[in-house]
Amino acid sequence: MSAFFAMGGYGFYVWCSYVAMAIVFALEVRSLRSRRRAVIEEARLAVPEATSDLSGKTG
Amino acid sequence: MATLNWYRYASPATFYPLAGRLIPWFAWSAAILAAVGLYVGLVVAPTDAQQGEAYRIIFIHVPTAWLSMFLYVVMACWSALAVGFNTRLSAMMAQAIAPTGALMTFVALWTGAFWGRPTWGTYWAWDARMTSELILLFLYLGVIALRNAIDDPRRADRACAVLSMVGVVNVPIIYYSVKWWNTLHQGSSISVTAAPKMAAIMLTGMLIMSFAAWFYSIAVVLVRVRTIMIDRERGAAWVVALDEVRAA
Image (cartoon, rainbow over all chains, first blue to last red; front, side, top):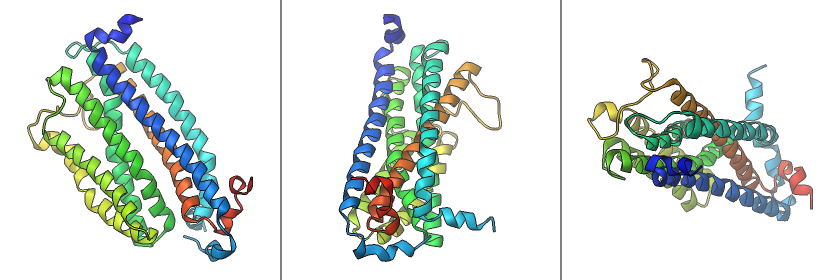
């Protein structure tokens, strides 16, 4: 197992790459999740009457 | 009448539920492919004769580098549609792609640096491919910053579309940089016209990781475009009628 993590002496470079990638994509997913929640919350607070003319618009 | 269906899905109100149904499929495909790809890349694939274990970085470097370029082209295509047909969905798709494209570019540059250090002896060089890839990152960041700088979303759509389309000229420069200039970065290991210059198992691992990156990008972009739709059309009847918005 420790041989696997050592990566033949290149462990630092290999794991800095893989861990950085994992962190980047995990943060992207997490920020998307909280952004979606925030946007839904704002939509709930929006007044439907004021902008209902958008409803018929397509394309 | 079949052509009308395309116009139907060009409306956020109809695209939103369609995207919602597609997201789990792409997300799960990405997760399974990534698990298989990582296993092949880190465990099954043999040690490279010249680069030792350091070469295993290419299993994430090459897919993210490909995606960084593909996503830019896709973003530019949606931008062209947005300008040509003035469709809201196209502009929203372009907007949704930019952050994921920027992250793919960042990961490609980062992993490239950590591969370059043990292999070439340097984290960074102002070589043609690395420099043009860095410019790609700045283009993505420029598109995102430009949108944030313009308050009116429709004006921001047009401005970002123009910048995206102008910037697409950089993609063939990245792609052909290793042919046009004699640089530090080596030529491609995989070509559509010649046999690959790598072992079959390594190629398999890289292709699996590439599909994982593709499906991940599609899933994430669809989630983001749905968020953008709710944000930009809040108050519209179709948004108000959504289950997730109605549930208190």
